[in-house]
Length: 95
Image 1: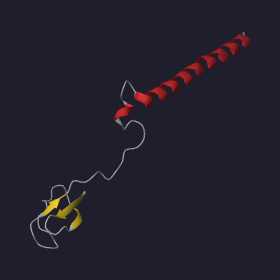
Image 2 (image 1 turned 90 degrees about the horizontal axis):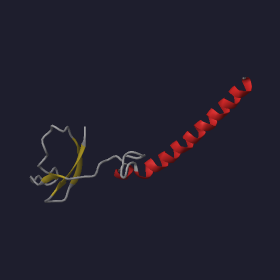
Image 3 (image 1 turned 90 degrees about the vertical axis):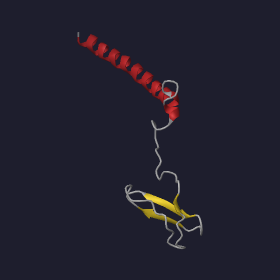
Image 4 (image 1 turned 135 degrees about the vertical axis):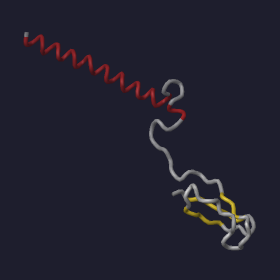
């Protein structure tokens, strides 16, 4: 269940309330009793970290994350011919 932040516009009382999404919005302030209790807009309580979560990761065909990934692929593709060459050498030695 989400936690909603409420604040009274009359007295300034603030309170966090654990409610279901289907529950009605609270309107009466528990401190002063006036019907000026309003739900506040708050920031999300979590952060998305790591590659793949930011707009810049996908900009210009991969962005900076794609560029470093591309360098890694070049290194592994360079390693593959070296491994093939050593296999050819041992195959040539056996023959």
